[in-house]
Image (tube, rainbow, N blue to C red; front, side, top):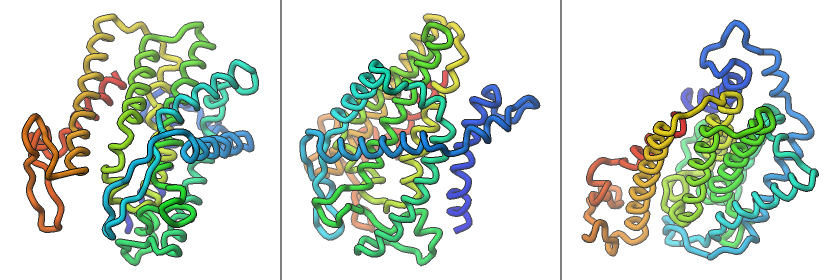
Length: 354
């Protein structure tokens, strides 16, 4: 419980500190003598504009999740034998979002630079929303028969969640809150923030640096790949096993967009020239990482969907039957190490930071 409480309080503080470091502390990790603390605390003050922007953002993404065209698939089997339906329309939602934002930008009704200007206020609004939303999830899970794997500790259950697949209204046809938060507002907002940061750099310097272009392309390609293989999310730990509480809600809604965009944020005023050979090596590192990440996760996905029918590298998948009743994959990359997909994650993160 102390660890849960430390994470509940500490994660928002750390996320805000990264914002301080990159914009008010000259990109340095430790506070500098000339750090602009006053500017930082002023920027964090929630605003009506930021609240309206985020409210409209959530509403737009929820409407796209619910009504945008996409194929219907069934999720993994639940403990009671049911399989919930999901609509896979993330790629359409991503394209529709960027087309709408582009139209608003060109019309003069909205400037994407607003996301840069309101970043601190948005961070505070999003953090407050994640707390309120997590409280709703805690109560909703208990009231609608979702409660499972509870510890009896309010703090622990608030952190981990009380519901596994909360839908509003309850039932298979309801709006799935976990998939929505996992796949939509945070991930798409991440690459939209990158676009805003690139635009701000162009406004200030009259060009977009090679480093900024590479970060934008790498991370956009990662998101496009994610939505291209969107069905694979249904067999991940988050969707298949975890309850939906503050841990996932804050991670999906705040941590992902406001920290994963850190490289682009940092590069706005750092327009150094990147040698062509360095760019080539960084591109190669990123693409190798993306290949490993996707190939390893697809092996796991195919195995989890049909363990006894899956073939990996041309052979039937080998696995170990666990005492808990699950199957532990031993073929392919999963025979090399337990989580070889993290090698891909590390290579991609390295290339983004390089």
